[in-house]
Image 1 (cartoon, rainbow, N blue to C red):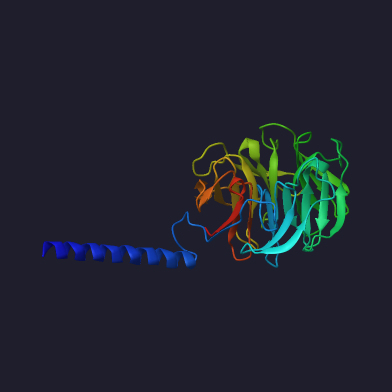
Image 2: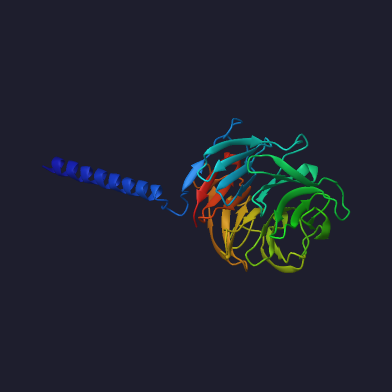
Length: 317
């Protein structure tokens, strides 16, 4: 009798475990689950179409086309569920190095920061090279050094993040003519130590990921410093090598920051108050390894470029 009761208890426990597992499975399918659980994980290491090798920049357009550039210098196009759309191309020259920044022009075309060639390249969604801007290396106004990222405002002006010879932001008009620049090497306000990325906020300001200073600096589009937040560390509100910044489309009043050093994404108000983090160091879903970039789609889903894991993870938080 005791043996039968014990078997019954064990059977009930197994059914309870199964119910719990089924419950988690339903939550995951529905896009819910523990805070560290991604909605979707996709990608694998390789050089075939749809595979990735250390992806390093991402952009998503209004038609849900997702663009990635990786360590092989390939620019590939996917949908936001990770389905490869068989569009792969490379810049005209890439032997000196690979592009490290992608963004979407107001006209819907793709902006590529061809970093080692000091050049901005504009491509159609199908990979046709439409035009190039810059290309003259140097430190004088209008010349460019290593371009880490480029964004474009509604008037067509380009904002170019530079490091190497130049630690500055350069503003060009829609035809590529020099307008202004600001910044220099250093740790003081308005100085930079490797700007990795830029984003234009819903407040009209320009947000710069000042990576080696472990902070975000915010400027007007004419270069006036508005505020600074962050600082080195792994606590709430602190940053370790912020490598990318992104806003949700529309008027959402928060900013997402990818942290290469802390292997996480941190969410901030526009004033710099932390709203939480997602991710941790690891190889399993929800784990990140040296993430480089992120983008937010029109549904508010955050697509995280999990670089050393050769994949993309999608989450909401």
